[in-house]
Length: 343
Length: 216
Image (cartoon, rainbow over all chains, first blue to last red; front, side, top):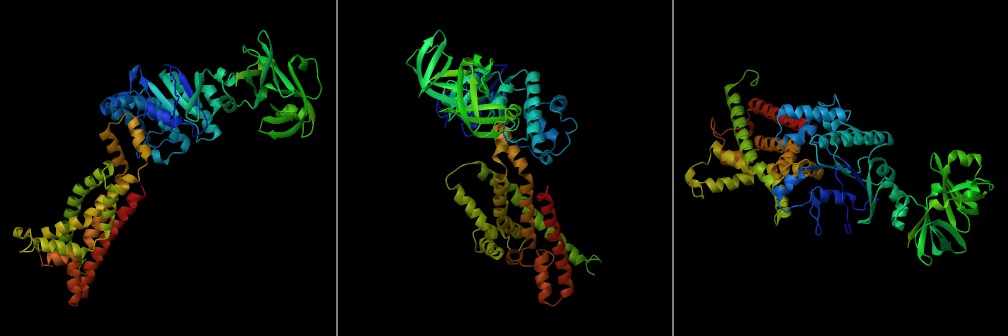
């Protein structure tokens, strides 16, 4: 169920739709690829409304292609698979051959042409599917969660290959991912799709730092959301009060407005004592560590300062400060690290 | 001994049996594989029921089909004027009726076994409706060949129908199974055994072929 979808996919750029599983990303891509028809609303492609008659739909569908989250291969060789799109378009053997070999080369699949496609591993199938899609030189390349089923090593590899395809085809790409970081790495524009609605569209740094709603903030990893009221304003600097506490942040909103102050956990630094450098931060709180969890290179520290503040710091600095549950610490963050959203 | 010396009688019965079974398999496959595909790709009311009926008919008793064909082609029957009763043609017609549900039903199953993603993939890569159907049928080709071979296996090894509508006429409608039955009943066990070995060998060959195809 999709509603309130308003997305403009610019040509020759990469747009990523990010959102949690079940948000409707696949459905949206299937609608765009004309595999399904919307019950209401308009999709335009190249300024043309998507047609109803199957003949015209086929013509339009042939200008784009989708690579599914779990690609399937046709029985037969890798060559048979990659050449499929060309064969059904009536390409001759020689023309198809050159294009197929080039696509295989681009995806580091040279030498695979006679392998049976069904015997390949998941990562290899993904690459065959990408080759099969790029060989038809689509005007619009749709990628549905291109790395969702892959291990970290294959994910990095597939991401590199996708970047290579994008450079080479110089085409328009619309991809979906539930991985915020992947969206940032690959996309020029990001749309956040949550619960079937497109909540925010913008460039990746805007989405990441200036989420326009609580839902988006949560999804992009803003763990600290403090709800309060703007108490005073001094030029661009506002003072937000929540409970008995205050935070300062940058905003053009007026006093009296009910807001959420969003602070990314990596903006919060921790120290055992107040030093010269730390006092330059506008917001300073003292509290007790109530929880510490390691996430590999980073440590997630929850500090109880009368309210909960989550900080994400490197494992090394956590070790240097000898942080553990119960340690009393100072928590700092700059006013520029506070993003104020109207509630 | 009879097999090794290439007994004429044994040879001609085997050849006739293969000819009759191949003919009925060929006719049934060329009609009912497409019919099965049509049923799978079209949506119409009663489709599920139809498929259920087809699957039930897999195990239609051979002798009952024989009876139906007998009544139809007997002198007083609706198609009696063709004079086909007790001819190889009658056996072939009976076989086609017997194995057509298997052909159509297993074709439907084979197509169903193809992941719906194949359809989406083909369409997205630019396949027209016909090209999409072609891609799906192509993916199902091993399942469909299995259907055809199983039909052949059923035709070659059945006896009820061949004896009722063929009449086991020597040199005309005598097949491996009807000959075996006769030879056994008159105590000619050597002959019966020779025919039986050939039949088992043929059935085995078909089954090996089926499992080879399924393991692709």
